[in-house]
Image (cartoon, rainbow, N blue to C red; front, side, top):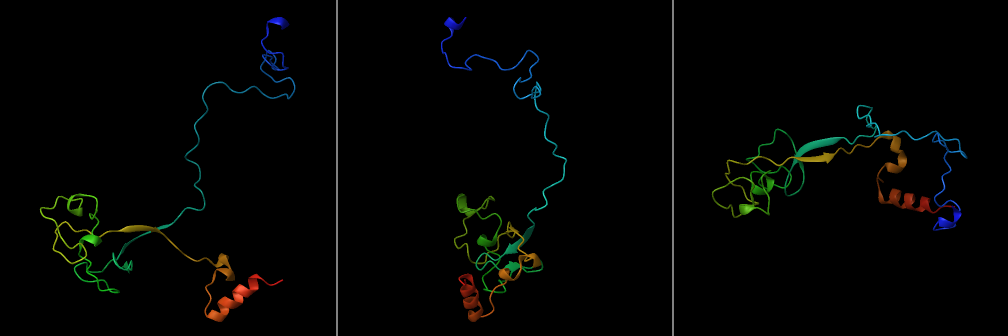
Length: 158
């Protein structure tokens, strides 16, 4: 039977497993047959879930607007109009008339106040940024230019 093998290398078409499926050299258990059981998705969640904040922001200066702000008025910081196309949730520059809703006529100036009945304020979802006391003193911002310079010099002390 040795003459009819194509390759003469050791291990070619040889089986190290016995008749019962165990590896003779390592003593391993046989692998289970059939499909794998599904993962348990009902287990505990990861401890570091990202917290999110939903807020409406000014289209011009990105100032967070309070829930009680009047969208018929102007931004409290930059005085830009809030009832305009750029503040609307349906504003999409790549669509017809730059609006996702079927409006009868194009509104020419997207950054000026208008009287559109389909207006709804754009709401953004952002990651909540909080500073924790575990960050330590290195995470604090310098209070003066001398503090910043001293922190820079401390990096290169021997």
